[in-house]
Length: 473
Image 1 (cartoon, rainbow, N blue to C red):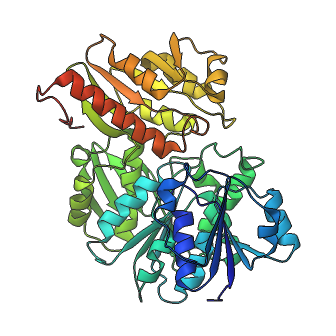
Image 2 (image 1 turned 60 degrees about the vertical axis):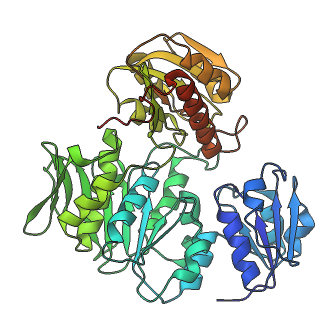
Image 3 (image 1 turned 30 degrees about the vertical axis):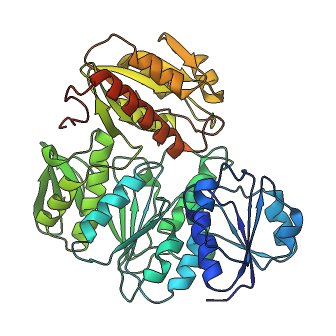
């Protein structure tokens, strides 16, 4: 890999990517400048993880054009838009601009081609994590990274010959792979929904970046696609690539996984294997069944036995902020779905529960369609609490028939919900909008919700023994 004397990290970020990039280049002797529009206080969790070095300089609360001119390489945060004037200045001055995933692929070179890539508008984190929990049984040294709060720079030096590497890939990261003409050996496309229209001009441009997942696959590679999603008809597999699918129902051609009569199966060329019953899955919601189906299909491609898949999936209890069970009182059970930053994600969450639902939602607008979200709220939500934000303001103007209360802080919203007298209710925090403005990111938002709920539960239960007991789905 080419050595860069001067490296600029544009956006320390809050998911670990910027920290990983900075530490990676510092360890290789580069002089590193980190520039971020956020302040030192906002970035403190990440700053605390940086290596101490005389070759590190921080520019916080602003960007300086000169920094983008006087460097050899810029690693931009995946969320930095293509029209950034700072990136434009860098390119005008002949500075190389790259992404974390691009440098990762360059650095691992020919060590391994055993790479699994997972993308999709929703479900990619859970699917990648499920697949990792399965694959470590065959590959004890398996690695996971990418858009999953584990930076690829944190695992790059752990990659050995024939290592199994599972990458969660956002559209932004996939866009960075186009110049490498690289696609993973096994590619999983979970779904494709409206999102990121505050970054992309339209859905066509958004989908184009996603195609890097499979565009450069070679003969013998595998592409696994959700056949129940419109993406299945949009994807065009390369010649001699093995196309497999996953979805509900057994009426499909080719190889793939399916759900039938409460059981998950995988159909190969000649045999159909029973993987597991859905009663052994600890993840609520129809959408999580799709995630299990996707991971199971990829695992069977690798020859993982059905029993091993069942063992791993049955032990998997989900990820934080994704329909995360928080706790319960005699009156209510609480779920944290803060990672639902789109209306479609919140629709999936609402459909995961029967009975009375108290929904806490709202936030910053991405300009996405709200019709389905409003329809499901009107049908399934008994009580609606909203957080202030541009998305919230648009939501209440678009045909919302439910009474609601709006709060200017999550603390006030949680306190209000905890004081309700309803019994046997599910309290779901699934915002349906972005977090910026009121929170640093969706993870801080979810952590705050969890802390507030646990505090309320402790006060309400007062040692009654109800605290923390989880329901079986």
